[in-house]
Image 1 (cartoon, rainbow, N blue to C red):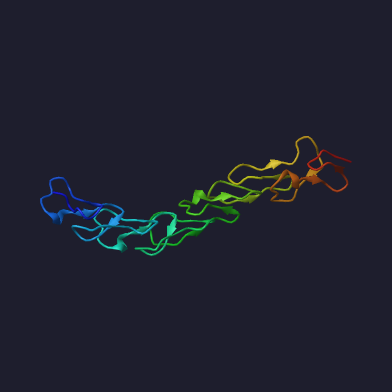
Image 2 (cartoon, one colour):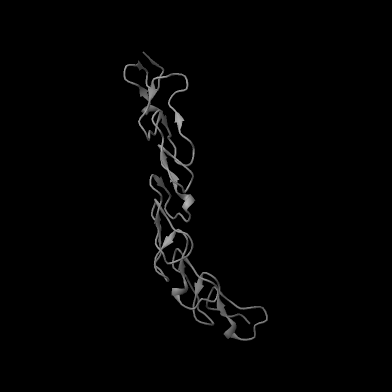
Length: 174
């Protein structure tokens, strides 16, 4: 016979002969025979969980066992379903809300480096307009005398050096 006609998320092993063999499925908790309740938003439990504190916050979420769990804010991440807090991305890197891995942290525009790693500013004379691990681009490959400030985010930051003139982004003439 069925474990419970009143509760969803109740199951038993094949061949079970007693209602006492009924347990809650993963993601739910409750007493033997049910009823089983869903874990709070952003959390999960193993099958057979009996109490709400068996529900652990998912990766990318933080809070006490049993909830409430809240999504890690943008610029942070959290590995695994543990009770720990969200961890800030490395300096000059950013991640979306709910990030669950260090490699979700991408270097900001104007900085380059591996996802989840140290981000270094684009050197003078280069720029990077996108986030992520792409390299910095040179201000100009055709002209000398074009430069930019360290950490530039746009080709529009490239200008002629002192003593030279020209259109924005070069070419620059003496």
